[in-house]
Image (cartoon, rainbow, N blue to C red; front, side, top):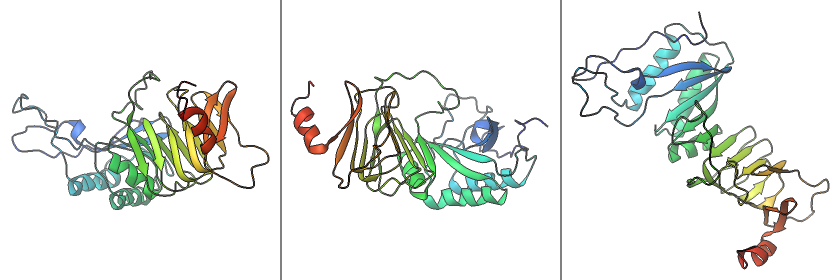
Length: 274
């Protein structure tokens, strides 16, 4: 059996439809040592111009989606290995913490581990981060077919997280990330825009991940294991300060510089051309 074999399809016909498109079904896909759990889109993609007897991508509600997940895990040919990491591709599905934890529990019954959630919904991204999963908020499935990204491309709206980002959690967002809480050692924030931590930043923070050198990282208590802005990298000082205060990391003439928020505001915000 090949690694990309799929469980026996679950047939679910919609009214006035002769067949079901694979895109409307829950699917598993093996890719690069990880297992993708692909959820169908939440939006109704059935076109009014489609033939009456053509494939229909009718949206599934949560009970139907949950039933398909359970059937996929418990029936058919299970091609995965125990302890395989699962990446949940939620697309535009709106999932709350309870539903994500239910999916994690169902995967755990098959000795699978939910590691990351890909989503285009802000509420799902916040729920996943709150539950402690690594997340990547995207508007498409670009992670499956990577393409070159322009540093100047329009950014998404900021992602706001009101919780502690725990160790082992990675948050990726194609815009600015704002954390109203702490980020623990072992956590990672990756933003195409700026990063603001209204608390203690003690993990890895990468701003301007698409290559924008004008992005900044700010925290009330800056104690990172590593800072990155665009392609520049900075490590924490060997002797950290005894007293912390709000600081800003930015790219200067010789790499990443760190200044107190007050000094940065006086120097740069009052003279934007610098």
